[in-house]
Image 1: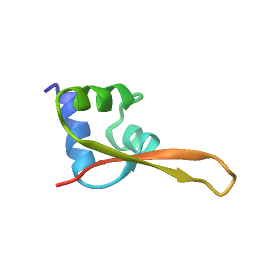
Image 2: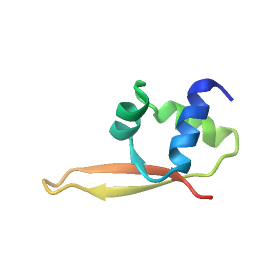
Image 3: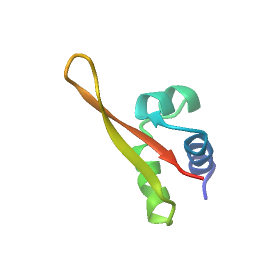
Image 4: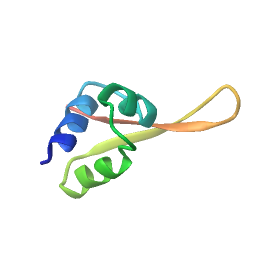
Length: 65
């Protein structure tokens, strides 16, 4: 596991986070490819869509357990 993957993994184990939240918290670029790589390695990264008040939507990511 790379350092970046480890940082994202640890953050996702702490609760639900949006892509923007992950980027701001870890000071990294778009983490979706890192999430994809974690899934390819067999980690169960959960996600769910959330609606915004203005009709937009975004995804939250987390790892249970």
